[in-house]
Length: 301
Image (cartoon, rainbow, N blue to C red):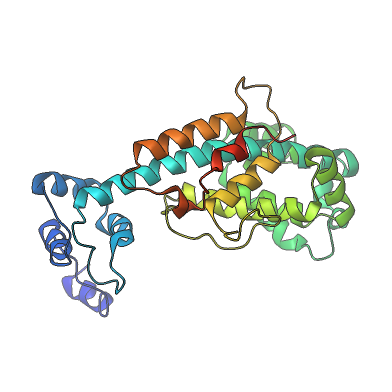
């Protein structure tokens, strides 16, 4: 493509800056860069736009300059804190997501049959069945190279029982599937597997799916409010990470695969993370109260 073609496309877009230029911009806005070579190496491996999103936490009230004394390494440490935080959250979400797949597919398959999901009558009337079927076919096509998908395509003519199909569901698709079930089915699943109001379970799955996507796409979690509100929240900050983790605890069933309870493991991991980054990250920025660990001392029944 010619140079002129790029110029036409980039009209109205900021001009790219070299790494030296990026460092000058940060320095002109008051950021202290103590080790220039190290800062250059960082920007060679972490995109400037991604990293500056963490530096934004240290901007003054006007949002133009960094607070006095803010160092480049402060932003890098916050970035590292957030990276480790996302890992802890994703591990925590995995068990709940896998268990929810099992709970929902087991219930639906027994009541409506292995491929009962193909019948619109197995869902609530608000369910967009045509769109759902299109999405499931796209998932099957997209994952055609997976062993279990090839097996069902070759041996069963492309017929997929729900418990197999759900292995291709994203957390978001899983949440929508549950939300589209008939109210009575949602109630029975919520009562039997979770012991909570089905409206809470639906809300928690929806919100945790958003959190999962934020983590999976490496979005900043620290000091970045999440959308939505958690039903039954225990604080006024119902979009905080803390409230999301309380919702996750409510959905977590004791897993015999692990000797340590989820609540204990999570509390220990978070306590260490907060201690290691006490100079840069505050639990309150994630909605964690001073006595937060007590909320996870016992595993949800």
